[in-house]
Image (cartoon, rainbow, N blue to C red; front, side):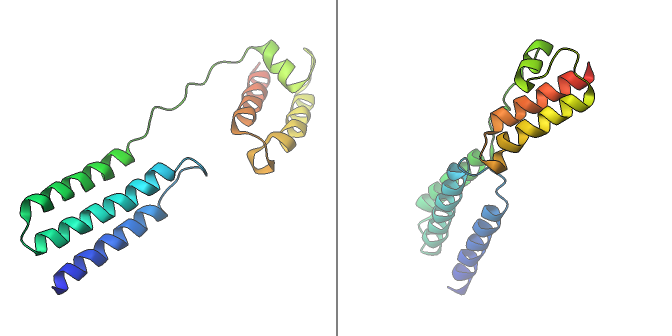
Length: 139
């Protein structure tokens, strides 16, 4: 019976390590957290059933736990980034067509002070501002 407790402790440590390695942004990782906890419960149930000699249900629970673990690790495709036109970039930053590098950077810094996600802005707007600055600085 001590091997069962050792296996259960190993599953708990695995779940905690996996939860600690979550790299999702806030608000997007709930699925992976729930899947990790649920798969740990399924695998622990499989260990307990196997210890009692119920091999078929144990295999089913272990398979479900492993499937849930693997499926929660798969990420969707990265969102496509669309090219921004120079006119749209100037409009977004609020600079003229003959703006210098210093004016472009000053406008970007002013807007990013409010649009950055750490300051309460959105990731989408911050990435658009970065794309606009990059587009204008590259020419």
